[in-house]
Length: 139
Length: 136
Image 1: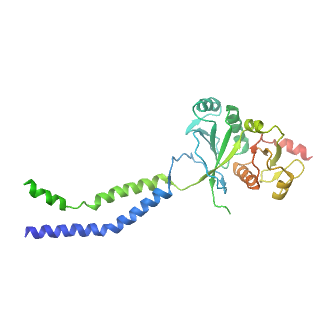
Image 2: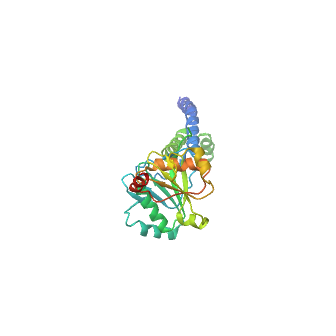
């Protein structure tokens, strides 16, 4: 009697596992999709809405990132920096990294404010400034 | 005793539930961390680098609030006027008005890039007062 019971429970176990195989197939497919199609990256938009652009030249991540929000708050590599402290912070970073910088400015920022930041960057000695934009489909 | 137990263990199959747990955790991780937004970058040489590349005087283009480009002579330049009146291989300085939003500047920069302008930089913002005086 006990042998019969064991066999029955074993059969039940294998049956429940068999039912799970389609689920695992789908979950594996989803996993592979997210692994291949998605890109793992640090989310560092401090409430920014980047300007849109239909150009296809992909952005290369830069060691130094400056974010300018629409309230004119400056984040240098994810740290809040006052405009007055910016030159000092930049020269410190420039000693560690090559002379390229990524600027992520909110699309509502006016040129007046962007120009001040760009001027500071030029004065600090950055040769290339990359203005980051969101890629949209070309219309 | 041990010889009796060994073949019994081999017969036991690994439960798939543990595998699903791990796969689900991996799936959650990749779903939450991956992003599908694509970024592009508009490269601008700083005035420092541009001046060393060429000694010639750069050509000036003005950008109005509504995104219209104008030169010193003509306003609202069309694409054909831009390519015929300007040398696309020469350094070009884009001067937006102070209140121009970054989106408008980006649109103008990408428009110039698609027309073939290679060395475009952003210049000092043009004061509104000067523009009014120039138009009078």
